[in-house]
Image 1 (cartoon, rainbow, N blue to C red):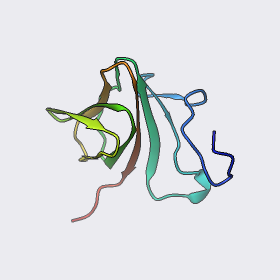
Image 2: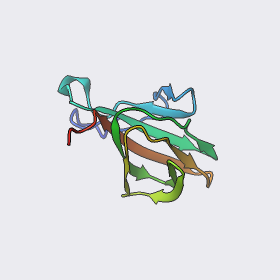
Image 3: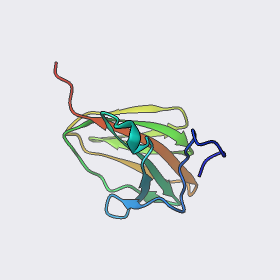
Image 4: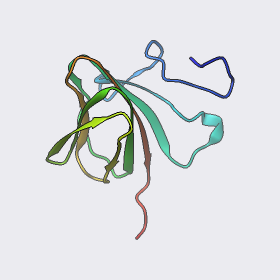
Length: 116
């Protein structure tokens, strides 16, 4: 769904596929034609629900775009809301949680670990 312009795309709950073993709705953010050097996806939760926790070798950020919820990184749990940007280190357990019964939407971007 968009605002009518061919230049705008938007998360659409009705067409978003299930991801993380069916625990969230997801969907691409960046059009494939751009061939971006990173992975991307929307993450969407509603009601009282939690995305399946996981780890991976890529670094990642979450940008909260709608609602509020909680992020778990390692042993830490903290509140997040619209405008927050969360750094997810590589090889670290993480998940997102919607607790208040509303909707919770974030954008995720991941890439291979930086060389230091």
